[in-house]
Length: 254
Ligand code: SAH
Image (tube, rainbow, N blue to C red; front, side):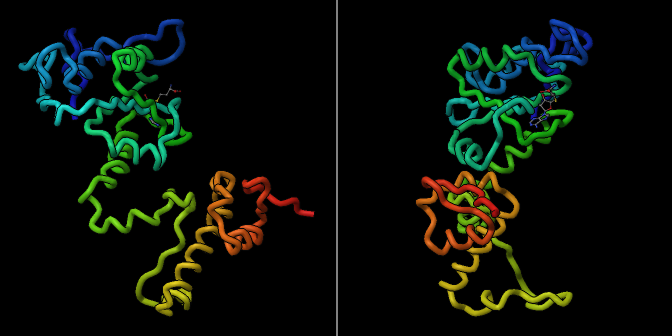
């Protein structure tokens, strides 16, 4: 983590100013962000990992050298970005060096993203969902956590990453249960205690389809009918969906 104010050059360590064109709120200055990103990403002319313009006496911020020399991918959290999804997390997990620029106030001067793109840096402006936070820090934590758990060694059993919600199947995960088998008058479905792997697999797939149909019609619409077997199609039909031209759509209800 780095304190943006380490790259300010005035006595008040100002990082924001009023918006050109008027309107409420403050906008973060591109010059301060530019110095910060250059330093943190190791993009300053010359030495990779140099602390840049930051004044070492005033800075509480030790900038580590850019790791591994991998190209930097700049992530800018913003509610006006494209939606951050599991696909985005997978993509970012393949990168060698991510730098996240957290905004505050009304966000960061638009030239920052433009400038780094034109310098050949990969820049992703990402929204973690259709709501507005006060700052990018929590969004950054969301990105870091979703990406980090895809790195080898982070999740104890890598198998647990395979059948998750938002995985390759495009379905939500089935309901999960553990001991005790009976609790609060509720019992674990018999099939899960049966030891019959094929039946368990089928039950889980059916539940995943039902749950996705009930909660996320957008995900059902995005399914490729070619990946569904006849039983899948029946389960979805019970939930009101039919296949037409290789895609799922809500059946007419009359
Ligand atoms: N006026 C801006 C919102 C600024 S919110 C607009 O309408 O687009 C202030 C900061 O919070 C943003 O710069 C960003 O860093 C962060 N933020 C807010 N909502 C976010 C979201 N849904 N996803 C990612 N970052 C978000």
